[in-house]
Image (cartoon, rainbow, N blue to C red; front, side, top):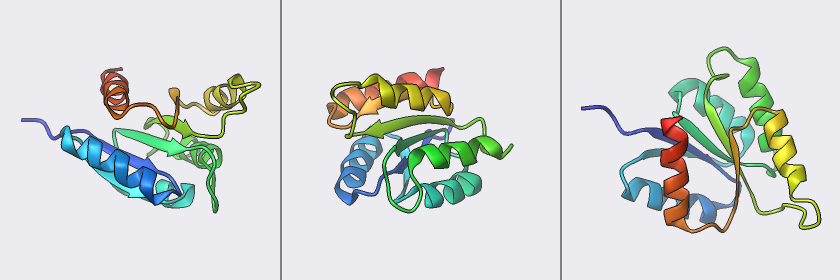
Length: 128
């Protein structure tokens, strides 16, 4: 029997982390959390998650800088990263998407999507 996928959730908002973690744990994933990009890099190097869901805008180190650091390390460069954000500029939502693609994220999720939709997306990312 294979071990459930390990997902690293990275966000500076505790309530976001707890809601996403509870949902993903409930459907059978293993999850670990980090409060900023610097913690995420450390955890990714130690635990090699199957997928990272990471907020783009955080203090200490934002998701974009963390993604760039992950890309530089041969041990973490192949980990799939999906950005989460609540701050998309409504006048140009493609800006965050463009940045996400430029740094190698596989997708971009706007915070506030339904939890079932989040689970469906995560399952899809893990199959790719």
